[in-house]
Amino acid sequence: MTPVTAPRVVSHESADVLVGDVASALLDRIETAQARGDVPHVGLTGGSIAEMLHRELARRAPDASVDWARVVFWWGDERFVPSDSSDRNAQQARRELLDVLGVDPANIHEVPASDEVATAEESAASYAETLRAAGWTSFEVLLLGIGPDGHTASLFPGHPGLDIRGALTAAVHDSPKPPPDRVTFTFEGLQQARSVWFLASGEGKADAVARALAEDGSVAETPARGVRGQDETVWWLDADAARLLP
Image (tube, rainbow, N blue to C red; front, side, top):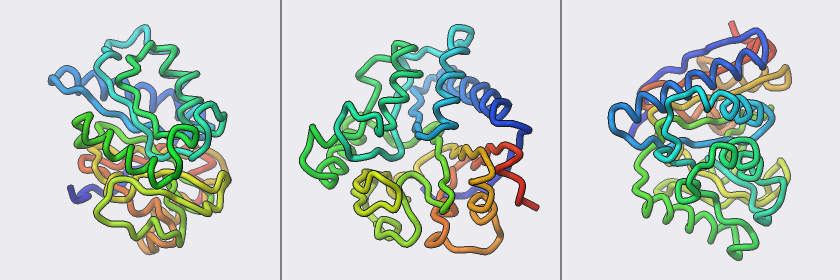
């Protein structure tokens, strides 16, 4: 797949309104995919705005027509820490969303933790093998965040992971944001998505958002610039995160 879409910005007056809009859009998207006979694969992200979204999805789920037994969940990146660590994105998502919905454990694919495999490299390799074994070819929707430095997933400015080719996943060491060891989808992996949805809230994200969406700039400085969806790339922002945009 080669990215073909230009980004679209959807701005909201507050984080709460943002989360409500994304929840509605995601439920609609899953319902539409299932109506055409697909089993949608959804890539989850971490962070405070993702936690709000998970709670809102769980709240709305009883009124939606989604068959949760026919949705497969992945993570765009994960911290290489023990499986019971609160630092893991999967812990929060399970607690606030997946366990609440009663999603089939066979459809929840966590990145192997540090108490399950010896190294982040082994974890990345195992996760890539799980993708192949599960028949994954692309995400229906891939949710991503952006850091104040412009990173997305665990692809950080100036880090070696930006240059990896020929692999879907990679180990990350010496992350500038703790914990230092992580596993991430590479750019090649992240590009395998019908829709890429970036979620950003708060003034602290405004500069990074502006750099990611600017006409000029480099992926090395702002890695979020390097991910686009095949059908659409949407930046879901609150007013604070969007304040530096033209």
